[in-house]
Length: 116
Image (tube, rainbow, N blue to C red):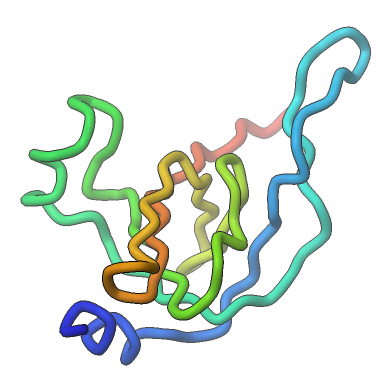
């Protein structure tokens, strides 16, 4: 229960785009993002200590942990979360609902798109 209480104080309403699955567009497989939604989430940076336990090279300290308290797996892999002016893509999901009543999503910072 300690993790739940520590996370709960960081919960704010965030704008997210939930991945609605994959489909083919012009012969290319693409992930579909639904419309914007607002969810109560806590977003905290990935720590250097945490990086030691994640797949090597897959995340950096510019990536984030997104916590959903008391809910149930609302986001899916590929969903986008806006935080501090950047977009983050959910890459891993850790379900801790049975142990401490939250879901942790690990999201990678989306690279800036080059201007055309």
